[in-house]
Image (cartoon, rainbow, N blue to C red):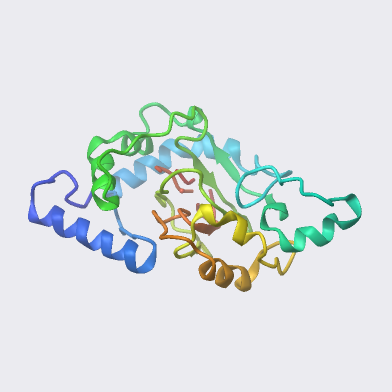
Length: 250
């Protein structure tokens, strides 16, 4: 890394932690440009390209809601009113998945992104920023570390991540687009209140949804890159994330 994460007792490390905490508390997200050295980024791209090419578009045909959950059955539900319900219940609003995902078990054992994910210094740095005494890695054999592969016109839909925080490591500069959209201060626990948000279209919640999420939030976003309500556009990213060309890791 280009940052002093290996110097935990130094003033430079303490200053970095303070800067990251300020960003999270003020903006709901913490950004660390050029976290990896150019050599590490180039190596990561080379390692992931073969599998990324094979996984392009492998999510097409699937639809999920922003909670990655099954819609709840409610009293009075019927086929005749399902369309009307979908307009007013966020969990019933399904997004089409149009990108590709490299699963954890498909990421090479010695890959740079896996080394970053397993680095004890990175883990302790995250804990210090988040004010956590201990950080546990996911034991999910498929989703602990993933790489999102996004080509032209593809994006990762609005969603809540299932973990305490999310880290997105961008590995390739997109030719166009590449925005990360998120809603500050949105807790997954606000599910009951978020259901009443009106979905403007059948392809996106739109600006009204972003504003409504912020207004009905219950607590701070605990991490950037999808820790709250988030959407990622077109890119490869890995390590914890997207490229107009070809991953993402969370």
